[in-house]
Image 1 (cartoon, rainbow, N blue to C red):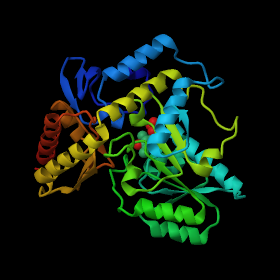
Image 2: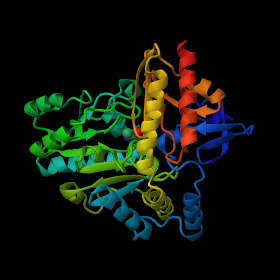
Image 3: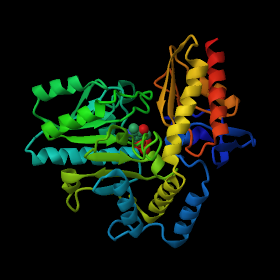
Image 4: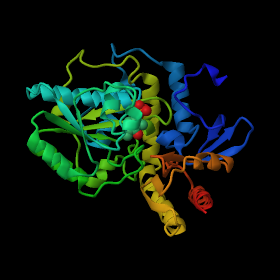
Length: 390
Ligand SMILES: *Cc1c(COP(=O)(O)O)cnc(C)c1O
C-alpha cells in the first residue's frame, strides 16, 4: 500500500493503531513503551482525555471560519502563551517550519526598518529549523540541504555555542539583523551550550539592535523543566517559535514576539488559511491547562535528571559511550559509532527510541511518564546500548 507514497521517509516496519498515555499498540496488538512521543509532540502521552474532550467538543461546535473573523479561542490562546512566555503577541500557523518562516519574515522587516537592503540572519552549524526553503536555508546541516540549491540568501552560519564567532561577524558586516538559535539542539544531537551562551547572545543583540530569535519548537512546552528552555538562562528573547508539544499531535505552530518585533506586521503582510483555527486552539488550550494543573514542566525537570543519573550510572564507563547528557526529558547518549540500527532493535523489544546525528540515541519521552516507566526506559536503553557495543 505504501507504493503510492513518495519516498522521502523510510518508516520502521510497524503500524500503530492506538495509544494510551506512554503506550502504543501495533496492528498485532503488541505493546510498546514510547520514549519518543512522536518526536517531542505528544508530551501528554497518547489519547489524553483532556485533549480528546477539547478536540471532540470543538469539532461538534465549530472547526474553522478563517482569519477574516475574530476567533475567540485563538485570542485566548495568544493571551495564555504570551503571558507564560513574557511576550507581547502571537501569530498562529500549522507547523514548526511555518513558525520559523514567520520569525524570518519579522527579522527581514526589522532590517528594512533599519534601511538594510539585504538583511542577514546569523544561524548555527548543526541547527535544525525546518524543511521549507527558507528554514532549510537557515538549517545548519549540508546533508539535508543537498540537492535543493539554490538556497535562500540572507543567512550566515557560525559554530554553535561560539559567541566570539558572532562578535567577529558583527565587526565585519553591517547587514546582520537577527540571531536565530535553538537553546538546546534537537535534531543536531541534544547539544547543550554553555550557561552564558544565551545571555551573551542577548547582550550582543541588544548592543547591535538585532532581534534574538529562540527556536523552542522542540525544547518548549515544559520539556526541559521550564515552560521554555530560555527561562533557564534568565533572558527574554524578541521572538520565540513553538510547535511540536503545543498541540499534543494536533498540528499547530506559533510565533511569539515582544517589544519592537511585536509591532512589525501590518494587516495583509502575513497569514495562514488554517492558522489558529478554533479546533487546534482548543487542543492547545487543553494542553496548557493540563501542563499547568499537573505541574508537568517541573516533573519533566526532576524526572529527566533522575533518568540522566540512571543512564550515567549504567553507561558512563562503557567503552564506546562518548557522553550521556540532557536537560529535563530531552536526553541523549552519544556513541563513538553510527547506531541507527538501535531503533529497530528497540522496536523488537517494545521500546520506541530515536537516533539522531548518526551516532546519538535520543530520548524524548512524554512528560506524564511514571517513575516506574522512566526506570523501564533507562534500563531498556542501557541494555540495548551495552549489547550493541559489546
Ligand atoms: C521539528 C523542528 C522544526 C520544524 O518543525 P516542523 O513542524 O517539522 O516544520 C524546527 N525547529 C526545531 C528546533 C525542530 O525541532
